[in-house]
Image (tube, rainbow over all chains, first blue to last red):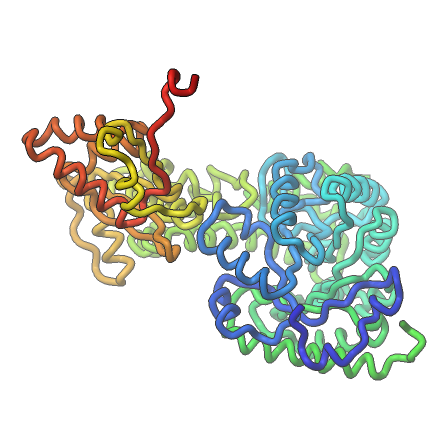
Length: 298
Length: 267
């Protein structure tokens, strides 16, 4: 495993406490634009997260780079097509492709989103919001169970940014997410930027949201940039992480302890070293937050 | 309580067609529900349009902004995505363009789209190890008539009734495209080389019947020679056939060669 120097100096909380969350350091989303640079530069990144669907192809450059980079770095598989909250049946072909890819990649874990992406066989290719109801919890929990049984492993489920909430909600989003994780046994991929975006759009407190989640369930953190339009915020992934999200991240690490963290950039993608430098900020903030944490946490 | 399937069906209809989504179903947050729904609806159309642009950069340049927008709106309306990956969203683009005015009146438009989709197929076709000419030399000459070739999985044939590839090349190089010529139905061979770079070239004189026999029909070397003989002096056939074969090997198109086991040999 390639580890950054600062990360190496810190003990791995997961290793010290059996059953606690594993620790993989600081990673980046692996994007096509950086394939060659990753091989040439061998950047100081502890791990990469791949978009699973991008590699569900027969061959060619994506597969070549996947295999080459897999030999150098640990990989996590992050999907966008599970549609775990859809009323449509689970896509068994997709699950088979996911399992096959996992057998080739041997990922540190597999994640997807707490959302639905399509209905009636039509795919929106977007991460659409669910109503925070017992009905939806039962539906999603049952489907996560099926997915985990099929894959033979627990998955991580990520909170999404949202712009609409539904009137028949019976609870807040954090309770909804926490209950699904508790009942299904899945872990949480906490997207700190998404918490910030949804908090601004729906008027809740981001710190309270994070504090209400079971700390041991949160295995990974996403950081990303957003666009601020004043009255609302959109999760665009086309900017560096904004200061207000860095602040929320630092408070989150102080609260949770070390959580494997990565930065997502999906548009307006800068040179690789620019993202590596940005990841350095995550590393520094994370380590500083841990140094402020009471010793009893681990 | 609203059923989950009802909510999802109405929500998706709103994204696709701006069909009514009951505002009473939405909670009022800092963002009002009209704005929130508009964010999703705008993102839906923008994402599909971006996917088409990513797959068809030269076609979009050729059509220009107005026609491109018209095409995207029509295609997205008629072909909502039923695929997992956005990469497959535009699979019906060539057929759509060939059947919908004003695009259908310009054969080069659908042909350009078709060429760009073939390029995509070549890009991520399965991998396979190539063999070189020495593999042929390992067989005794009496075996040659029975030899069958296996082409690399990325090999494709593209045909058009006009100079679509020439137009594509100019657009790719950001030059003005040449005038449309419908009298030149050139065929092209496409493949991905050992460095995973997509290659293409016109199919040469005498090569098309050979490709028909070996690539499309899986026939053996003797059939290849018979096809070539239909258009050439018989004395030229052996040399021409060998030169075509040699070229295929040198270009990295061949992954296997062998003599099928006959039923008697198989016992």
